[in-house]
Every structure is written in structure tokens, then in C-alpha cells.
Image 1 (tube, rainbow, N blue to C red):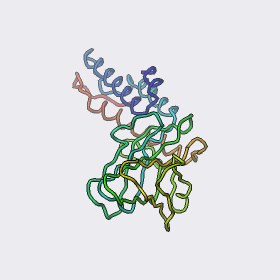
Image 2 (tube, rainbow, N blue to C red; image 1 turned 90 degrees about the vertical axis):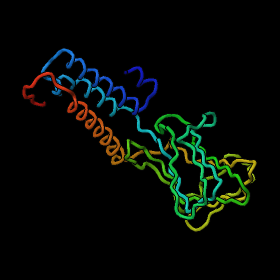
Image 3 (cartoon, rainbow, N blue to C red; image 1 turned 90 degrees about the horizontal axis):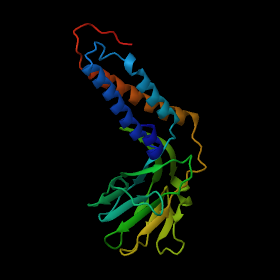
Image 4 (cartoon, one colour; image 1 turned 180 degrees about the vertical axis):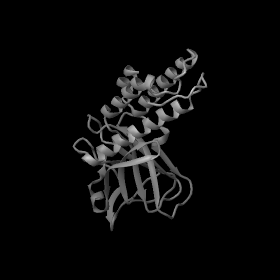
Length: 241
């Protein structure tokens, strides 16, 4: 388990390893016909080990959220965590119909901004001419189950800091009131926009506490669920703790 944590450096991997170890511990007690199959004491070591791992693993940006006022059909948005990486399915979005309402696009990534990394890039592809893209904000989140915890956001006039990844690009970035306009797009040439780098970003104490608290709370729920649902071999009353 520790080796897998070092290799993958991922919170989800830690949860999976912890759940497997806890399930194995419960299964051993059940097969040994012990009466404390639902007691938490035999499993405190596993629970404590995973809790320590959750507190020490770095906090990752695993969602880049792009907010748009509208989006034309035939538009692809793809997030590239680095120049050489191939984006996964969660890092891609395709709009099939014209959307005239505010749209929020979640693009998956895995950026440990406390560590050395490449700045992410947003790629825009269009399937038909005369499409323009407007961006209201770009936010970096850490996601844990169904909980989204915002870490960094750029919006409004701050969007003027965004620039083309290629200085010879033919498209244009232009500020409108409260949003960034991307026009002069070409069907045959993708648009590459350099997103903010997180290497110098410092998380606040509140952000760190919120992320770590959410990690521990989810692990406590996993432990409680597995131990509560574990079968017992004895009809004796069991005390928890």
C-alpha cells in the first residue's frame, strides 16, 4: 500500500488501499469466528495509517472549471496538464447544441502545485466557421467525491492576463466588459491558451484546513460504513470503541 502511494501519489489510491485493507481485516475476523467483527478496536491501526497518509499527501488541483456565458455547437474544449500529456476523457468537453445560457465546464486534471509542474493549457477546436468563445472565469478546484473546494480563480478584468501559448497564433484574445473574447478561430487550426501557473500560489490556512477536514471526514464515513455493515458470528452484544 505504501509503495502504491509513493508511485501514484493520489488520494483516491489511498482511499482504495485503505478500504481494501479494512475489508481484509474484517474478513479475517469473520473467518476466525471472533465475536468482535464489528468492533473498531482491531482496525484502529489501518484507520490511523490511512488518516496519516491523507494528512501528509499534497493537495492537488484535479478540476479546472471554465465558466462561459454561452457556447456554440461544434466546439471542443480540452485541458492539457502538460505539453506531452494525452488528456483523459474527463479533460475533454464537446458542445453538441447551441447553448444560450451560462455554462460551467469541469475539466479533469492532476496538478500538485506545491511541486514542479507545467502550466496547464486550454485547447479550443471548432467544427464550423464564425464561432467565437467567451470566458467569464477560470477556477482551479480540488474535488473529493461530490465536494468541490475552490483553490484559485481568475475572472473579470484579471482574464486579460491570459495569453496565447503560441506567439504566432492567428486567433485573437480581446477583453469585453467582465469577460474574455476569443475570436478569429479557424476550423483547421486549434486554439491554445496558456492558463495560470500554480507554482507560486500559496494556499490559505482556511483552504488547507477545509481540504484536510473533508479528506478525514470521508475516510471516517468509509470506516464507519464498512465496520457497521460487517457480519457478526456471535449474537452477543458488542460495544464499539
